Image 1: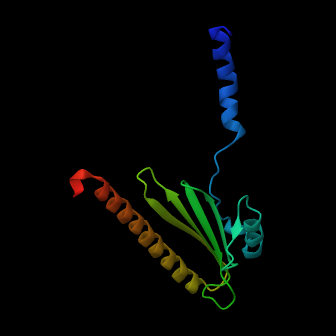
Image 2: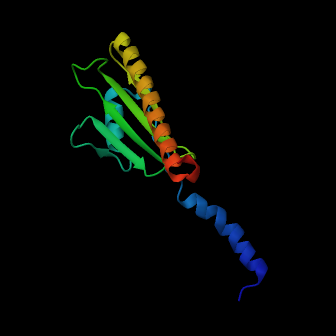
Image 3: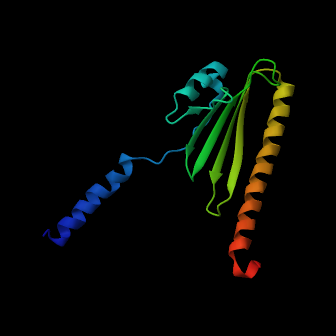
Length: 146
C-alpha cells in the first residue's frame, strides 16, 4: 500500500497531464483569407469530416451532443458564388442548440450580403425552433405543465 503523500503526489503529477493528453475537440472555423479552393481542400482534411453523399458540396463534422458543423460550398450559377457558409450548431447547457453562421464571399458582393442576411435569419429560425422544442419537452415532463 502506498503512503498517502505518494498517492497525492502521483495525482498531482499525472492529473494535469492526463487532461492535456486528449484535448476536447473544438469546432472548426473559417479563415476567409485562405480563399475558396484552399478552404475546400482544408475542409476535406479535417479530422472526422464527412462529405454528404446527397450533396458533395456539403462537409459535416460533429462532436455528438456538443456541437456539429456543416460547411457548404456554392456551385457555379448559384447566387454569391464562389462563397462558403459554415453553420455551427452548439448545444447549450439548457439543451437548446444555437445556430451560428460564418460566411466567406469571393464573388458578387450584393449577392453575398443577401446570402449573409439569409443565413442569419435561418440561424435565428433554427435556434428558436430548438428553444421551442426544449420548452415543449420540459412542459411534457413536468407534472405542473399538465
